[in-house]
Amino acid sequence: MAATSLNAPNAPLLQKTHQTHVFLKPISTIPCQTSAKRFCISCSATTQDRLSVQSQSQDRVFNFAAGPATLPENVLLKAQSELYNWHGSGMSVMEMSHRGKDFRSIIEKAEADLRSLLNIPENYAVLFLQGGATTQFAAVPLNLCAPGDSVDYLVTGSWGDKAFKEAKKYCNPKVIWSGKSENYVRVPSFDGLELNPNAKYLHICANETIYGVEFKDYPVPCNPNGVLVADMSSNFCSKPVDVTKFGLIYAGAQKNVGPSGVCIVIVRKDLLGNAQEITPVMLNYKIHADNNSLYNTPPCYGIYMCGLVFEDLLKQGGLEEVEKKNHKKAGILYNAIDESKGFYRCPVEKSVRSMMNVPFTLEKSELEAEFLKEAEKEKMVQLKGHRSVGGMRASIYNAMPLAGVEKLVAFMKDFQAKHA
Image (tube, rainbow, N blue to C red; front, side, top):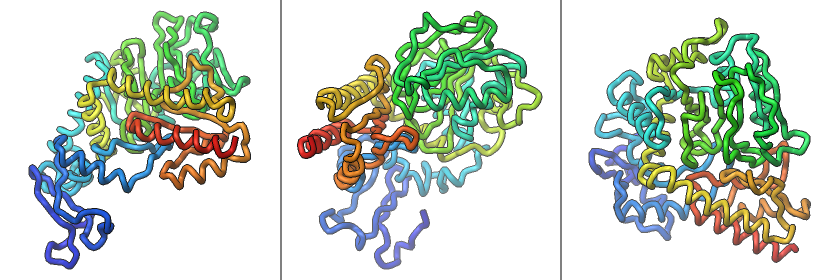
């Protein structure tokens, strides 16, 4: 954001709030229905903040995208208020040296808050990396096993399948179960799985974004020395998780905890230091752990945004409270689908339906384009299902407010009344 001279015509209003510079719209661009009175965006949850959020909401859509996805409005407003001059430092976070004390304080607080949210023990390293979760499809086998080692993959959707295919380049993976023949609508019973007693790890995708299948419990590796590895990209920090059940958790941030560009890895420290010789330096977990995620220039602004989200989740009461909100939102939407007498359908088994990604189809598929068009007119966007499966998909991550789900459900009922 470029600074504008305060002497220039139509210059933005500028106020200082707790050493924070806040740039607002030029008066000439403020819509006629909006008051042009001066106001400030404070970093604390004041009444003025809430009024600012409400005002901002009038200009924003309900974004049901699977990722990059909606972010909490109060987080966006705080980031806006700190963009030009972070905490009186005289510079933006995106201008800071990643080795300076200011950014170190940001990344250290982000890690500390994430540890508090998930109750991460000290014998686990927390890494803020780049390359998205897809890069971890290679990094996991490169760090956890030798080229000939056996590993197990439980495939409940497209992302688990892609992870398996990438692992074939670096070890000897086996798909112990796949839901592909059933179009990925369920999670199998763990009792019947043929686990390899020699597998170095068992890999799952905890929530399949495309198909809307979510693990409600987790399998245990057969090998007593093996570990459970989970891709949690699309349900990360949506509910409490016992981290000690896993050897490694990884998650792309752009669905539930931040913007695109950051991948978070939580790995047990005793698993570090055994990377294959061919492992690129940027995929070696030990190097990043030894350098506190600062081996090279990290995605600084993305990490800062994740830190703001973690702080917000703690203020909400932690993941127990967040989970309650997510259950309520998902319940309202699934009930609307199930009570539509077949006009809307969700193919996923009820016991493993995702709280984050809700896929559904219309009984009359020819109405899908109109559904999307009319929804967009009502400021509800990105409801189209993934290109590989079609239909609709509503991603209702932590930051999707209850009002967004309620508006979608009301629209769905109205659309059904017109077209049933």
